[in-house]
Image 1: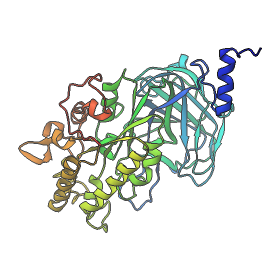
Image 2: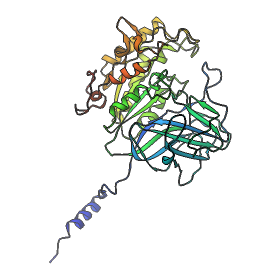
Image 3: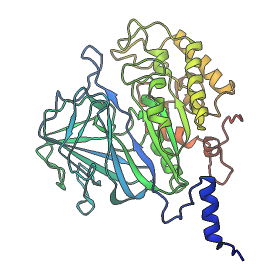
Image 4: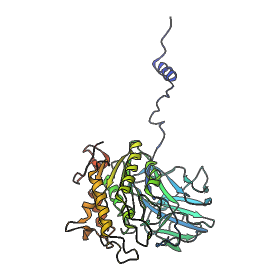
Length: 434
């Protein structure tokens, strides 16, 4: 008389016959890694551009110490370095990570070496990123960490992030483990540091803000973490949602100069992020305003239909990947940069293009939701201008109060397509169903 196989054996036989693998227990499940902070890489531009790069010709036998405020926390961490725009191998002699203290100091007890395939030094090929091995280091949500890199060879800073709004410290020799770096100079840029990841809960979601200098936080307080994505990260703290800043000052939707155009970098900066649930697209004012200025003296005037076609490309690519995509209206800019070498940035024809683009963003129904940053920041008595309380003074970028108002206006339910379980005090914004 044949006996039936025990249930566990029978289940295994059925799985084998179907080709399916047995489910892992939670204890055996692989780690879920989420990006908690980013700085979008940029190439150095040529010396004939109107703005300086603010980096030295090269770094040699020097330590570069860079701090970053993360969004979500975790018990293990790893770091992504980038040689994306380098034309030769990038040699990292030593790399370390630690908790941050002010003025380039680290919390000594938290200091950890970073390794790459078990080695403390690494050579990164041209065009490549390099992800460190995981490090046992508990990082708190909204915590500050510092990454120190020792560069033993003459190293051009070919891959950088121009507008860090954070002080970078540079000192002679290998000071990566020093509690206090003896800095010979400071930079307002980042070099080679692209992302920080933490081991996170499987349900972690990610929101990426794709934008220009107004997302990068230009004119916000340096070392203050007052950019609008920083404020949004504070609002979402505790909800298991990472907020990543993919802003590049000077960035454009359709053209390069201070970084690759948004269509070119959308996969790298947005869609490739693990667990990405939503993208906020807040870019286009430089496409409209640069022509006829020292930024782009020979560029033709922007056309509304070209900008809309660019947004539609981003929408289609996001939806192909199942990512929610939220459009943000372009903020006022009358009088922008008029007392600088970039005068001519604003013009009546350019304002008409901005208004037409904003009308399409609000009423076109193609974004999944809309953040009306224009309505939040404009002066009701003069809608083409910033509200004075929110104006940094250059009539293009908000100050700290303006960035805070923008972030606090966001309806978190519309942003994440959530039920009211995610709290928000902001009034509902335009929300389209697809």
